[in-house]
Image 1 (tube, helix red, strand yellow):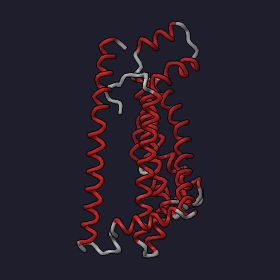
Image 2: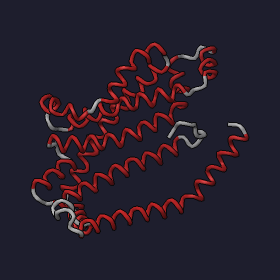
Image 3: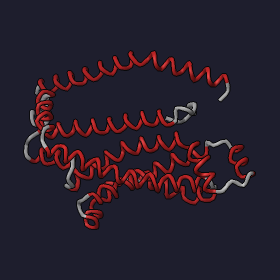
Image 4: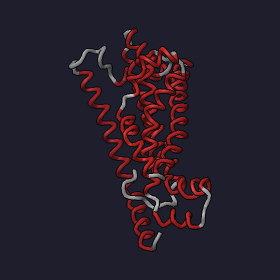
Length: 273
């Protein structure tokens, strides 16, 4: 990093630190405003009470559910299914991304498959996968893998392509072994893009896991939402919906902090989130 880049990075960091209190205030205002709007719509009888319960009723239901073992079991099953699928997608996606990005022929050969996979809705496989895998953790993990792996491949490819050609040429000139080149050059240089793919993939993984539970009846948060709806208990259904939203937010925020800590040494690159 040059002296000019260091000065600019430091100025940008100072600007972000000064903006934190204002951003926190606006987030609080938006959150309170959203709750107030929800309460107003619920009280106005625009929708039946069974369709949109009040925030207070949902908060009471959430408090009642949190103290039960059933709540934490459902939360754990959803997280476990998402985590297993994401971990498998990370191993396969990073490996394929590095291998294909290092070879133009390999990347062009796989482009159609990757583009097709990114656009394919994984939940469309539920009907078939239930017959093959049942409704256990295998179903959720498989669908999460299908939904996330292509995203990680693309992000890994982008990270590898951003490596300056001079670095790779120097490594090849010194006849650096392939494995050492990947571990010491490609992976560290592509780490910001890979971590962005993992962070985005984690949010998708939670969404797909819950959707799978809703549509297939697999145990977890999604199944609890369905059971509450069928049992004519909207506050409990919304309590689990709120839980799903908080889970997705928490996973994304946690991985964003991890990403910042891991790649703090690297200046921001245009096009990276």
